[in-house]
Length: 212
Ligand code: ADP
Ligand code: AMP
Image (tube, rainbow, N blue to C red; front, side, top):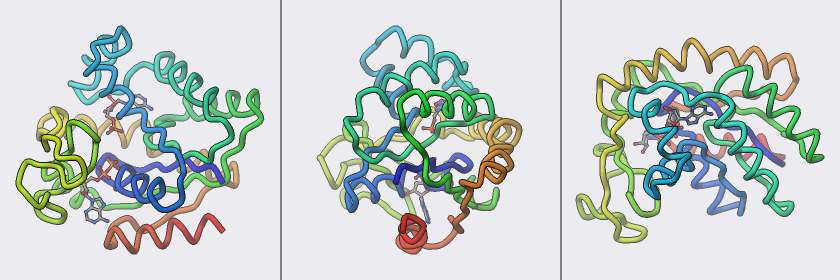
């Protein structure tokens, strides 16, 4: 089954996607990761995306939608998780068209619910591996050796957009643009929600139970 995983920044989409990839062999399509890779490789796409990301704003729909379309064209039948896309109703509508053109479907759009108070500490404490993207947290999931990735030995850093001033814009953008997707997917019949405030392992069990 193909999934959309959505929720506020810091809700745990990347953390759950990592587990779905590891345990079920699904393919993670994280638009945020794709943009960060493009920035690292200094591509034209990266240059276009960076100014929006640094400010905590959404990258324009036309850029994101084109990028996702290209990824979906090259999946070779593997089950996928859309992590961080769609992020507004216009993107969800575009996704619907792309999927039907490619004879693909989304089984469930799973909303990870976490209170705003908890999101702030998750985002300010988040650290990520610069090389493989593994996700850590200074309190709840520290790397075994500070600053070094457990999985690949890469450098573990704080994302530029995980600084407090940018976080405020990202949370506002979420409320205005992404939260309305709950209504969109409720009316499509694909909506499911999971309590994202539980321990990550329990969240994973809940997500997995929705795949049956
Ligand atoms: P998103 O991809 O939705 O922005 P992440 O998966 O990167 O969110 O998680 C944000 C931060 O919260 C990370 O530091 C991660 O380790 C931590 N985190 C994720 N899920 C949980 C959880 N269930 N309980 C506590 N901390 C969590
Ligand atoms: P994320 O890694 O999902 O937290 O995304 C980081 C940043 O990438 C966001 O704050 C946006 O600037 C940009 N981004 C990621 N996905 C999208 C999307 N679907 N639409 C627009 N911008 C996006």
